[in-house]
Length: 127
Image 1: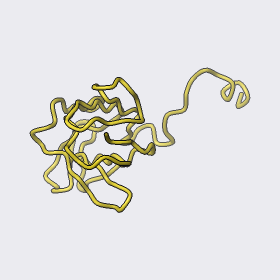
Image 2: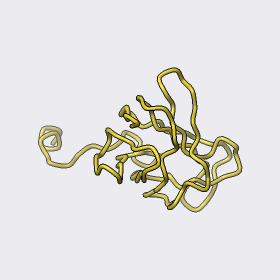
Image 3: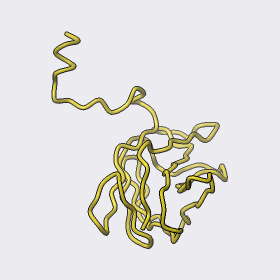
Image 4: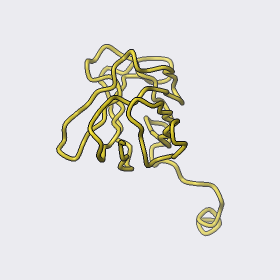
């Protein structure tokens, strides 16, 4: 059975399929996925249990550069905030490589006691 599963066309998404997870980050300006972000352009994040909710000050979307500097996305720049899809405007940051971090207290039907974060594993080039 393990061999059949390994050869199946189903893609393994996450070891913790029930938790917070970002599957893809799409740059709406260039149409690229999981590679490029355009400053001032739209970004669509798809995943699971991502809705930005809770009163913790860390809740939100943040870009992190190679030096570890954090650049939060303004709340006014978030256009859609759902559990599976979040759309936002990419902040004006210096060109370079960034990681995208999402922090929320959302869980289906309730809020968690503490915020949890997920850092998208692909490095995104902002231009």
